[in-house]
Image (tube, rainbow, N blue to C red; front, top):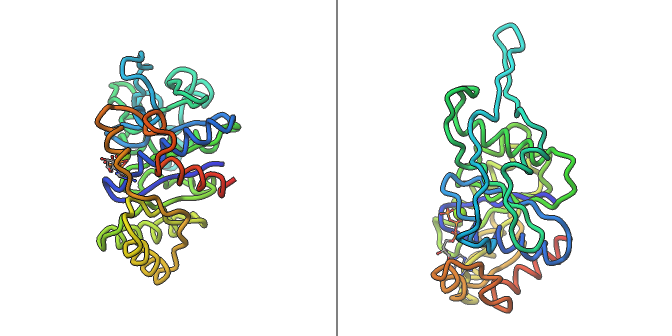
Length: 254
Ligand SMILES: Nc1ncnc2c1ncn2[C@@H]1O[C@H](COP(=O)(O)OP(=O)(O)OP(=O)(O)O)[C@@H](O)[C@H]1O
Ligand SMILES: [Mg+2]
């Protein structure tokens, strides 16, 4: 299963991506967690020790520009994907490998392309690889990285939303953009829902814009408390409401 998690800033993309990975990992399969955010922080949510040794940082050097004649060119990742994973991946609990692609270092000799190109090509390389791991991509707020036909390789894209109007509107726009990119299966994940009234408002809005809701995740103080300790909510309290609802969601996805 290969999924991407998108949504407006602060809605809970990283919390949800990381917890989905941990739940998938506990089921026994291999999991690849891809952090596509320029401010990467999936590591904490996955439960990687703050003092663990870091793998080398990816740089723009990993991409080359191939001239195709007649003024045309394309970008290509220089290394086969398993090698990228072996060099730049970091082990996380429950059989997860984390690959941070969102903040490539600018190297002097690479393709001289922007970091967006590098991130997009790396995500494409991961998702189109023959790897048999489940993959979860924590995207940044724009869908820039999902261009380049990446959509073909994603089973589903989830747009995370919170129960307030601007967030709902933004989720609607994301869903539209995703469909324009050719991602057929787009669903909403409602997060930080505190009561019936909020749930109802979300249901009504999503119905109006024809966006199926995959799961309603409650507001849960354990997420904040785990955050404060720099811990994964899974390690903080595996019986917390957030973990339980994400478990049910993953179950339904399989
Ligand atoms: N279900 C929840 N209940 C309570 N708090 C939550 C929940 N989900 C996320 N949060 C809190 O919301 C904040 C943002 O979460 P997170 O970093 O996962 O969002 P994000 O969408 O990845 O943000 P960014 O756009 O900055 O990458 C954090 O403080 C987190 O603790
Ligand atoms: Mg995030």
